[in-house]
Image (cartoon, rainbow, N blue to C red; front, side, top):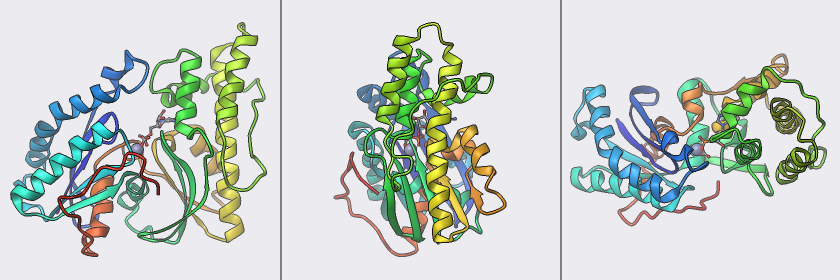
Length: 324
Ligand code: KG4
Ligand code: ZN
């Protein structure tokens, strides 16, 4: 029984996982409304909100799971990447639980957690597979050779996909977070404009900063263009690039399973385009609530470490720029 804690950004989340895939509780307190007024996440505000919410949310999780804190076998927590102050709250809290109850502490890489969300959704899924990791801070194509053995095939050289969605939404004055809004308004819009697809035919790396800048110049030069159509055209360019590269790699390597992870995995056009490969490839993506930040995925990643006796000590430190 693993108790998981996730506070890397603007979601306070706790979960309790029994065995490999029995979720007894999975609670997320989203701070979006608090940060919306600022147009983005304010790190100090996020950390303070975690302090306020984490303890009460944990009590609720134990209540929902109908167990006591003493029933858990370990506590797993995201220790990076993320906002330093926000991460510190979760890690300190997890250390307190570990120390007071004498239960092992397991530090989890938040990015790995996103991939592990898929093992919760698809208990029969097994490596090897190809992963497209698309979150607010990261974009990468990975070859997952085994549960804890990942090879990076390509990464973004500048902005992450989610970051590009958020920045373009800001340029278009659509609010924060940008991904869901762009996704929604694009459904009723026309893809009228041809925005660049940087590095399209050049290996497996990505670059989205130029795409974002070209949207910025377009808005300046064509003030009469409809926001919806600009958003839809931008979305088409970014999703087309992601889908092209990940499917190309999987087909070249003759790997049938593609697993999508991270907040942008919730994007409906991404899902629609990937589904057109269904006769050649198996596409896996978790339900919406497991795509965005949650602690269930931190429990599931913690489980793999638990069964391998991979524990941390109370020296565990946060690593805001932790890579894959
Ligand atoms: O994985 P995540 O919840 O947090 C990080 O670890 O970064 O990802 C958040 C990102 C945000 O940039 C948000 O705009 C994007 O995921 N996102 C979406 C959608 N839902 C969330 N992007 C595109 N379409 C969506 N439907
Ligand atoms: Zn995340």
